[in-house]
Length: 329
Ligand SMILES: Nc1ncnc2c1ncn2[C@@H]1O[C@H](COP(=O)(O)OP(=O)(O)OP(=O)(O)O)[C@@H](O)[C@H]1O
Ligand SMILES: [Mg+2]
Image 1: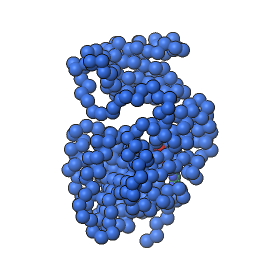
Image 2: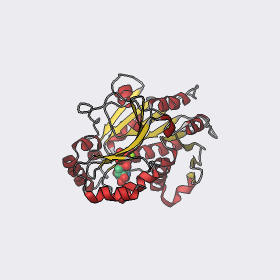
Image 3: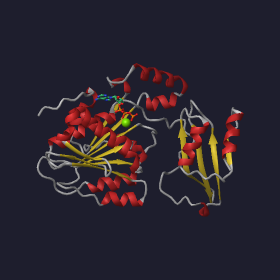
Image 4: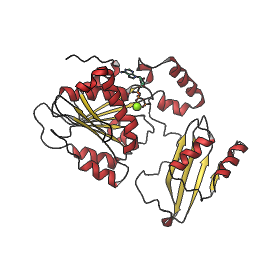
């Protein structure tokens, strides 16, 4: 059977790479996710004995990202005949290639519970050979090591293990840059792409990016040019990202802190203080949202409403502050 796909040339090399680590940074809309989904559907149909695990930091976000992309790729490739080739279990989120029983499953790394579920994965046929970590910058290095550790054991001749990471290069101080981009390693294939190399992007998106270049140059650098976010101008260097206990009893005191924004992001943090250390327990960083939307997001994330909220007072529209106070009991 000949399968027809529409692809962007820029992804030919990463799609062909057999390196253990294929690390793909890119601007927003460069085509990484669509390409990756198409690539895995083809690979799993072609090579019997391969199985794919898709990882997001928070497992439920797989449904609207990796799962939706892979399903979309299957529909585009086979149209209304897709069921001849794939079984898709919507509720359990398992995909299976009918001809060879290769499978795709989805997991998260949000907490120990999710990490344990990831360690105990088994497949109907063959081993776990492929991992797609989508929005990989969400993961801590320790999460990545757990995943990497899963790919071991002798494979049949011609088979290989591979982890593909796709992400926007949010910060030059990220562990992914240090581990994969700043060292020479024959097991690593690094790749960069921008929306300009995506032939399927529309004119409106180009204009949106041009606008962003003016109103948010740092964001444009990351999400438009696909370049690592600056560290030069960074004020804080001495911090670590890790899991920790966020229950209020363990802190000397806690506050919420907000810096208002619309074109620049609105930022809200739930902050705990303990022995002169600062702990960011929850965060929200949202562009182009009005107050009602921000309150909904903050509620969904479980921000504690009884805490005192400190706000950056520069240029606050009075209505904005008033609304927030009204909503905070
Ligand atoms: N091979 C393709 N065939 C058809 N459309 C495509 C293809 N690749 C990309 N596109 C179009 O380009 C859009 C952006 O692609 P995609 O979502 O893969 O970008 P991305 O690099 O993952 O962006 P982000 O960093 O924001 O997640 C898609 O929504 C789709 O409309
Ligand atoms: Mg994407």
